[in-house]
Image (tube, rainbow, N blue to C red; front, side):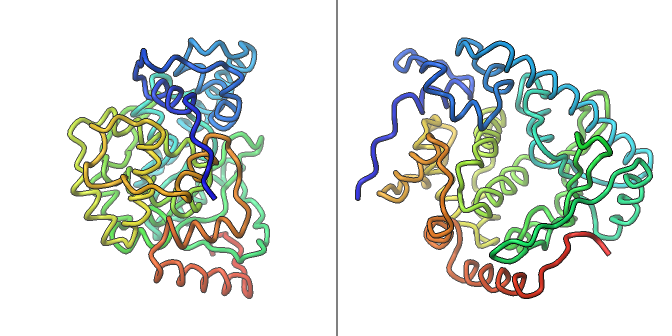
Length: 337
């Protein structure tokens, strides 16, 4: 069955979110963008595309909460620095301060921190002394996987969640990229007045691709894909050969191909992408693009099909299936010992 064509509103909005003007593709209406506005947040869409005429109260509320969350996360990083613990801030926090004009608009969700396993007890003690507590793991129908991170630590008011990672991302990424490599090559920036370490560009891109693959390219990864596209837009002379080589060693070459297909399909300029990747198309990828535009969550069967066909090498998919089964039989709690 052939998937319906992607509406022209999708690449028009995507390029606007990247800060690329396109006279041939006028902006869609706010109504046409409802799914993406909800997925990205009104504050982020309104900040990047002010001409979209979103509802002012929703934009303002999202911006205010983003500023509040930014203050909490910067404060948390200050506590870690005072304790002398080496860490790198990952994912949304890193992208917010590197690739967005207003970081507060992008700060949505947990503060992801990468640390060496040996420093986890000291890090947990820092936050437990401030009243943070671990969440409760929910037993999932298809097992519980946690080989790179733990359940989040929640602040007393629930508005600051700390996600501790001991590897850059779950299997298989740490076959080729481990915590020591990320910490050793991290860049130092000042974020919200606080000195903080963030991943270097290739490592950051690798973690984003790995995250998308781990989620079987579910459409709720839209913020991660936008982070990656804005990274490519801002990091001039991005080292594509290094990323390709790293992800091939990590058994994530198929995931990279699918990621670049998504970027091309949504309208990312060709000059930002490697000429050798992202040209494969077909009904499965066309359906994936349409799901991303409509923000249609896939069911379990579709997620598994996409894992085996678009996200994981066969040996990786088989290993993940075994680990899920093992987790189903003996679910972990997701809390450090």
